[in-house]
Image (cartoon, rainbow, N blue to C red; front, side):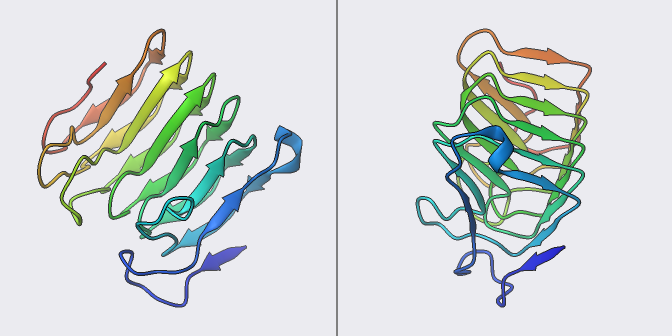
Length: 170
């Protein structure tokens, strides 16, 4: 399934996908191709989890404002995806106990000045394992690749390289 905005400018797109599901089984995305989603508007950054649960696997999320965004969302799984060429973050997750496994996160950021990363997580007890995080960019004060905020995150076997502004920060 391809979900694509009719516009191709990630700073002004009006298309987005919002997850409001309370149960992980109510929002399951697999083998999707998401293009040009999101804008700089709260709740409309791209694929948004708003105090929600669910999973995205084996999908491509590309060329949007922000690839995947969690707002106070916990117990989610983001696995085996390609997340690339988004204007700001590839993945920005605020919540606890989320799993990020074997994703390719690259070429994100650099289009809009600010704090951009391939992946950034805040909260606690997230597992970030065996991801390839590379060539993510920032134009000003961002970290560039992978950033963790908060206690007790587990980082295992991630390949983090080739970004600007810094790499692993945790």
